[in-house]
Length: 67
Image (cartoon, rainbow, N blue to C red; front, side, top):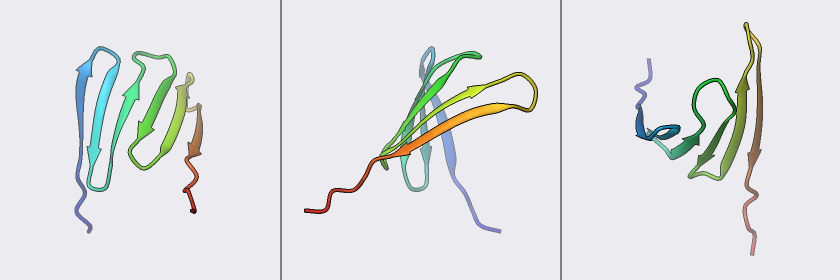
């Protein structure tokens, strides 16, 4: 079984700093409204929890620069 590390800190109301083994991210949004997450790897996620087992999530990833 692999070892994992994940820690989440509440910085301000509605703002969380999430740290794991490979990256960090900041999540904006509180309560039942939409959440916006920005990761150090360039990943951006918007999610919304809907009633019941439903949920909505949209993820975009920053393209790498090939120069």
